[in-house]
Image (cartoon, rainbow, N blue to C red; front, side):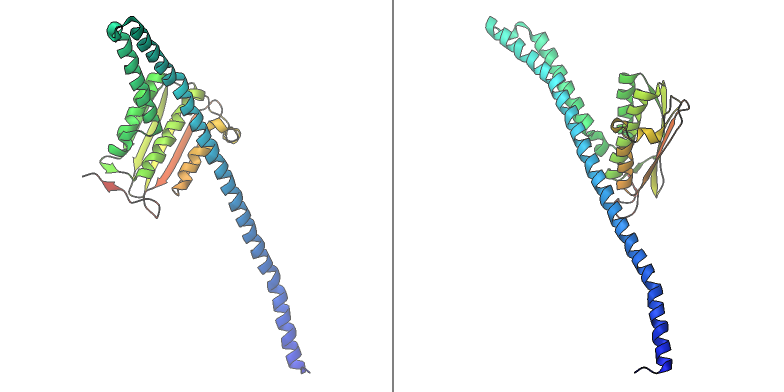
Length: 260
């Protein structure tokens, strides 16, 4: 049987355990909630990844069918027609024209999938090449500002920056209604800053996130995968500003290094 002082100590210990128990349960509940939210984010990311892959496959299939397929069919008809007349050289100009167009389409498709100059020459030449094509196709000029110099960026950072700029410019051409867009890329030792800005129609960012074609979720995910972030500031009638920050150091990317 416990003596009186021992009973008091036992009651105090029991009281302390009773006090600690709710905190322990709260911590466990918080941990379970974080795990649940993490699973939901992973599932949402997986869905977006599948949706993006399917959209890219549809675009490639449409390009192959509508453009390259038609050119191949035209080339086939020209060759068959020349064969029936007994002279393959009856229409050399037409055949050469179709072959040249076919080569151009295949090259464009390859460049759209991944521009080789991005790996060979770096981000700035790849962006300049893209701006030329973009302006020729959309009549929207690009005011390009860069502070990268002779620095060479890690490949994953280059690709993320290129795709973010590419998607932002596509959105501007489709929705902004402007004649010029400003693009800035600026590198420091720690990060790459990307800015795409226009003075066009603007939009409501909260409403746009629910639209699959807006591409905002995909651009944000590219930045987050590298440990960076993406901020979109837009107001209806007052333009749009997109700013992405991509770390250059850390565990997932190599530090910035200079070209030799």
